[in-house]
Image 1: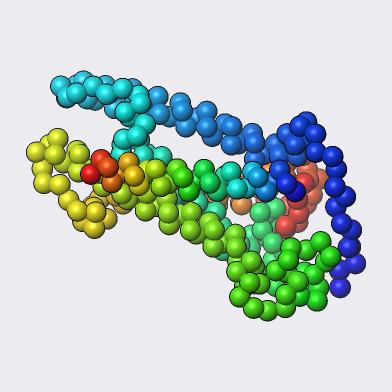
Image 2: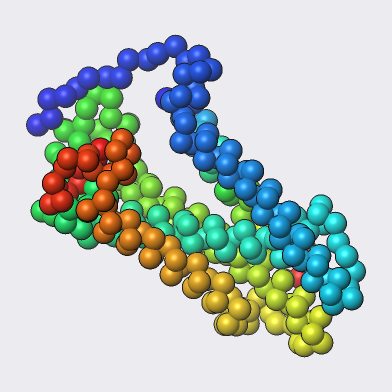
Length: 239
Length: 30
C-alpha cells in the first residue's frame, strides 16, 4: 500500500508564480498563436501569388484567414497531432521500449492493478474524486479520460479537415472547369488521403525516433530524458 | 491548481472553437 499521503500545500498565487508554474502551457500556447499568424501570412502570400498567376481575383489577408484553403492547412496538421498523442497514450499501455524514458518498465504492461493506479481503497486523500470509487461508469470514464478526449479532438479536427478540404478541392475543380464532388465523394479522393497520410507518417516517425533515440541519448535536465548517468538499460526513468 | 484548470479549459476551448471555425469555413465556402 502506498504510504506517501502528503497533500500539496497551497501557495499564494502571485503573477510571477503563475507564469513560472505554467511555463509549458503558456509558453507553447503563446508560440502557437504567433506561428499561426505567421502561417496565415505565408499562406496568404502564396495563395495570392497563385491567384495573380492564374489571372484570378486577388484576395486580402482577412479574406484568406476565413477561407477553406487556410482552414484545411490548419486542420490537417491538428488532426495528425491529436492522433499521434491518442495512439501514443493507448499504445503505451501495452507496448514498452526497453531503455526508453518514454516507456513504462518492461514488466508493467497492461492497465495495472488498483493498488498501482491508486484507485478505490488505494486512493490517496488528495486523489481526484472518481479515483475513490472502486467501480462504476464514472471511474471508467475518468480512468480513460485522456484517451477519450484526445480521440474526440482527433475526430473533430479530422472532420474539420475533410469539410474544409472538400470546399477547397471543389473550388479548385471549378477553377479547372471540372465537376465538383460531394463531401462523401471527397473522402475517397486522393487529395484527402494525401493530406491525411503525409501528416500521419511524419508523426509516427517522430514518436518512434524519440522513443528509440532516448535510450542512448540524453538532455541534461529535461523531463523527456533519462538522467545523463542513467544506464542505457534503465526504462521509464525521468530526468 | 486553479491556474492549471483555467489553462486546460483555454486549450480545450481554443481547439474546439478552431476546429468548428474550420468546419464553418468549409461549409460557407462550398
